[in-house]
Amino acid sequence: MKRGRNLPAEDQGEWLTEQLRDPELCVAYLNAALAEGDQSAFMLALRNVAKARGGVAAMARETGMNRVALSRALSEAGNPELRSLTKILEASGLEFKVVPKTKRARRPQVRRTGSSRDARWSATACCSGDRRRRHTAA
Image (cartoon, rainbow, N blue to C red):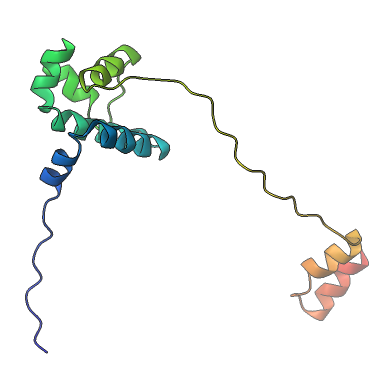
């Protein structure tokens, strides 16, 4: 069977921009990025939302922020102040909220049984005979 040329991957930017025009999807997208715990991932997601909402220039007009400052704030290395972040979210039709953290189910604790001598023996079971005798004799 003849192999054809691999076609380059299609740019999904337009598709993502179209999807992010839906406010519910925006919320889920930003929350997923926030859950990653990586600020650069969240800033990238926020930049994609701004792009879907008309781009940086339109967002700058709506927020009253300088376009360059807004671009810098939305960069991966951006570290916007809380008031800037609030303005960006509000211009996107979103808002900041603080909610109680949901409790996760506790994991059962592992109980150790047996004496400490048994623990030393099992921890050194892979050692050679001489070493094993020295470990267990202690």
